[in-house]
Image (tube, rainbow, N blue to C red; front, side, top):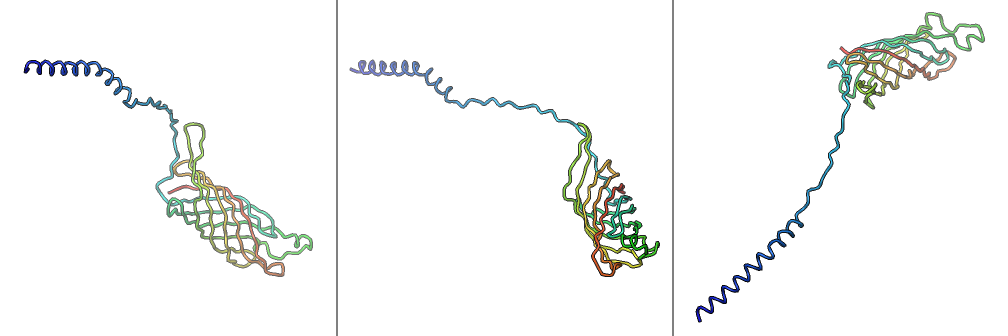
Length: 221
């Protein structure tokens, strides 16, 4: 009886071993199929162009000259010259002092009536002002593939005084400009500004708008 039980147990054990051996390859295959496949990601090779970027000098002062045209209301358009000194408080904000001079023509009233409302000496217009500027857009201009120059579009406004027609006149000025840095110490400027003051030479007081268009160069020091 005991030997018969052992034979039965051995036969069942043998069947289990044979079945396990038979199904083992199928289980291994299923596991391999269920494994997450590694995705093949193509890494693009981007070749970047190297370029030399102009840099602003570490100093914050900017000094230079400018010239252009100034239209004095009722007195024609003439050449203007001037000097500017700026201090850059931050990367975006700067303060500027300017001094300029021009000579006014005769008015149409003077020509038609052959008279002079002011003397030749009084036709010399000089102004000085202190203004605050803000760099609206700072960017770069590229020349070819290897050179880039820093640029800035800025707005500016301030106040000062204008000596004209024998009187000193409080003057407000505002406008905008474009700065082009050709090196780390040299900058080129293009500016448009309006100088606003009251004048009463033609019998009544009026607010005169005197537009100015200039180009200039400055150095950082």
